[in-house]
Image (cartoon, rainbow, N blue to C red):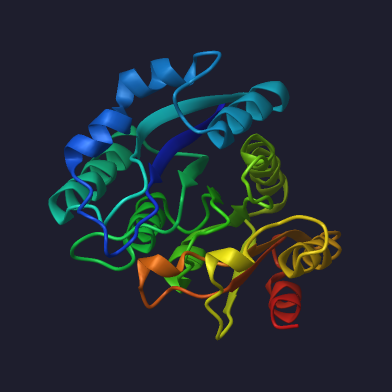
Length: 270
């Protein structure tokens, strides 16, 4: 029997001091639902981000599955999303999740540094809503930008947290493939555990280049050295300081196999 995977996305990197990002700006970028999104996902070169394309390709290569298109929206980097747009997005997502469930998994493509004019953590609001709708046992895997600002609400809702490992960002498709692999691991073993540790550090953008000889590259390589056995992913997210939100700051996020939360917690705290 085919596994049904809900496809969700919202992508916005927010500078709090820039003009508000409107519904029209999302419409100019990407805002597709239902059948329109389903058709777009089937294209050889969809308008969605490469992480979604990588996820789709890997799932189609290795799993008996059906993508269930829910909604994906993206706008250019800018100011906080207008509250009315984001609240409508969340309410629409809730309706679609309830109408089209049950699901065997959820894939989320997200930047992770969004704001709205009414909420400093719309990503956490959305992830929490999805978890509440699908229940505690359905795996939810998300791919996020290296510059995401991570909150506990985000990580507590997820089964796997997969952030880019390059800056400039060249590995989106690979991270989508990785998310697909984690989802299938969870189908066989049970849903994973995600642990988040926030460091008292807000790195400037000038310190976030990833290339040989940089501090960030050395940290990234050290994190990846621990990915084995119980540990499925180590994401080191420096964040986006211009969001000027309480969840700004360097985040260590570790995803572990089912039943291995303590191993993840021990590693994240090192």
